[in-house]
Image (tube, rainbow, N blue to C red):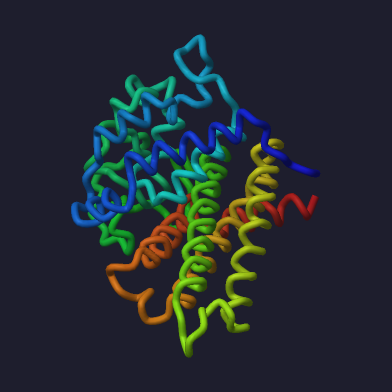
Length: 295
């Protein structure tokens, strides 16, 4: 199947990217890292005004009236920008939780034994009673653990295949940004009087980044069209791999510089790690695919 974005979809993606570059550029990203656990309410309302959360809500209910493919494009851009906050849970709550669609209400959801952004959220979907703070590897994703919840078991919004697909779209955005950063560094960083991108080993790393990205992109976009559980599971697996391995390869291209706090590479890797644990991790998608193949 050949998948091409139409003019409206390209305009939507460009508009979301422009909005995020204006409202959540590198300066705002670094400010969020320095003040972990805080939701920028002005940014959240700006997203609501732009229709980010109400994108799939029918127009008669005050939404934008678009579909899942358009939501995937928006969440891909959010992942590329490392936009923090419980975006998926709030998006899914639009139309059922007052204020979620407009960005006035921040909604999070219990995801198996974990809850993201528990203290900053206005509404929590699921039972988060007794949740204890957990040190998160990602400074932009505060976590709590729910005692007694089974490890690796999905729950809350994670049981919704749309939630898994939107998470895969975020991972795709991170993978795309990691590829962009790697190529940019390979073009500008010089060793022995030549850009490091001229060396075969670096070329192979960047080529592998691109191949994984495009494979994941096709799977995510196709799953947005079919909305099939197995397609979504495959998209999730490929997007997780593209994000995690892509960020690691980007770190490799940057060399020692990539390990420094000043570089943004580690932030993409840490976010990819945390997202890959959502909804029970890769095991849930693997089991779903295995069950489909066994029919």
